[in-house]
Image 1 (tube, rainbow over the protein chains, first blue to last red):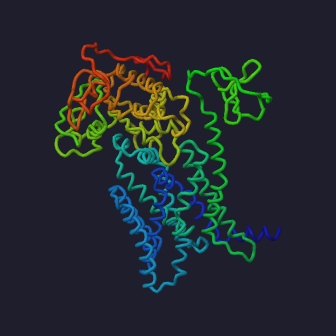
Image 2 (spheres, each protein chain N blue to C red):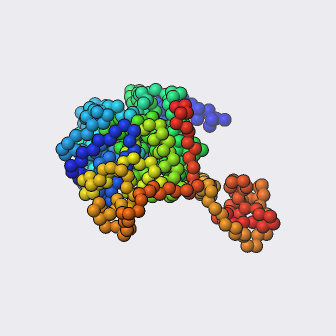
Image 3 (cartoon, chains in turn yellow, purple):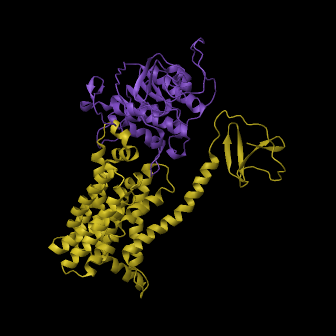
Amino acid sequence: MTSLTTALELLNEPFMRRALIAAVITGLAAPAVGTFLVQRRLALMGDGIGHVAVTGVALGLLTGTSPTWTAVVVAVLGAVLIEVIRERGEASGDVALALLFYGGLAGGILISGLGGQSMATLGQYLFGSITSISEGDVIVTLVLAAIVIVLCVGLSPQLFAVAQDAEFARVAGLRVRFYNVMIAVLAAVSVAVAMRTVGLLLVSALLVVPVATAQQLTRSFRATIAAAMALGCLASLGGLLLATFAPAGTTLAPGATIVLVALGGFVVAWPIGVWARHRARLQEPFAAGAAVGHEPTGEHPHEHGPGCGHLAVPHDDHLDYVHDGHRHAPHDTHYDEH
Amino acid sequence: MLRHIDLAIGHGEFVALMGANGSGKSTLVRALLGLRPLATGEVDLFGTPLRQFRAWHRIGFVPQRASAAAGVPASVWELVASGRLTRRRLLRPLSRADRAAISDALDVVGLSHRRTDAVSQLSGGQQQRALIARALAGEPELFFLDEPTAGVDLPNQQALADALSALKDRGATVVLVAHELGPLARLVDRAVVLRDGRIVHDGPPLRDHEVHEPWMAEPHSHHHHPESEVSVVRDHTPGVRAPLDPSEGPR
């Protein structure tokens, strides 16, 4: 009873309340953008933006302005630059991206050294420090995350069409470049938002892992983005609470715990997804009108029926039973291969 | 690379752009739609120069099938619904007319029963039909189809031909890129054959093997019998039949 009371007291602490708010909104916003990044096969873009944002944080620490804002500005500039390089589609594009990523990371470390900041200060942003988030930062995070969620959900028909098939979208009269840059900017903003929760080096995980988990089980885009947002929220809340209530003597870093909880979700969902896809393949209907020759099965001691343990698939006017990868259809006293 | 192309397509025509691989037929369609820049010359759509053209809702584009699946699952309905964006305003929910157009488009290509399935679960021919339904959902007047029959089995080609003939009956103008026409041959009013980026034939439809005659494209093994009467080969494969809605039906 006492432990429950102390737990509730801990959750009621102002720093903990701020951390919980930050975790929930970050968990919702990051996968919303991440879904469009994964759809465009740019899953690692968040990682690149995170690297570039390190320079932004260092500039903020050096000049004494809020690192969150300088990170937003530098990350947005970096994201637009990445999008421009990607759109030009030159053969050296990925090398140019690598130069940008590592330039951003090294520049950030160098600048923060120049400013006389200790590595521990920069480390708060590299690995997250959700429990030390200030009230001003929570408000900034809330506003930015709200913008990200509203735009991602509100413009999802347009963003979906552009990410699904850019050429079709252009012929449909959509301004493809505008929407592509918008996704890049929203990704940069969500990186800055998630910076305090999981840290710049792990930020991409929160953008991508919930989406990868969700799409194991979904068949539509809307279900994927909704499930990814729910899973992101669950993972960041769960990770934060797990880190907070770790047994005495062990210290769990909240950022890393959140990412590992999200990965744990994927590890659970993946085999279920493999099984569901296998089942869907077995139930794939035959092409209508395809002629089936008469081919009785060999010895068949087992009798198929409702609840016999074999998957029943409707086939024209009868049921087939999936048996060791074959389909058996009852015929008089024996079974036919269908 | 295209040269000396001078082509006017009239309202209600069903035109097949034909030619060997690399003859420039896909490039021509992409240039007509502004997806490829023009070095010289100009393109008018509905009498408007391409640069000033804004009435994209009048055009339906069916690209090659490779683009049907992306990194995140999308349902057939969602794919088709994205074709309706040409007529939707920003930040507005789908209207009753939007929903009706989407389900009508699914009916025409015979995929209504697969609407909740992921696009990646469809066969190649069904994906191609889903892409046609996406173009249909915007209720355009002019269709561009890039190789709709490539890699599609015969029953699905038949279903595709049925869907296109429903379009033709509704008065749509169709520009189709094809290597071989197959069951689509009976629909074609006019064939334009390209070779090395130039038009070498513009007129009545040709049989598939005529397109591949040496004077038109690379040598082909089939023999051409000029004395035989030109007839359209019809396929009677029962195959997958798309439920067609009558042209006088509600739209």
